[in-house]
Length: 103
Image (cartoon, rainbow, N blue to C red; front, top):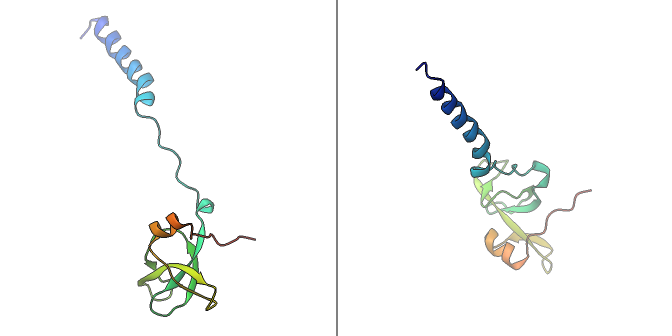
């Protein structure tokens, strides 16, 4: 253990690992900021009430009842009201996801 070559080799390996690891395992990209998440309309399947919530998934929790009853909504221009839309994947494919305009 008193041999300097042992300690030099250990220090060299530590230095090499410290220099190589960031290139082999790059850092994760930053998480999406809260202001970058679009806000869309959700409609309650039970009451028909419309909510503006951040786009997180489907179904999401109703803030009033606590149950998973909110689904993405599409606007029915003929009846002039919001109605439950198809799943998020279908809405994204068809271009139906319209973020709520922010003032």
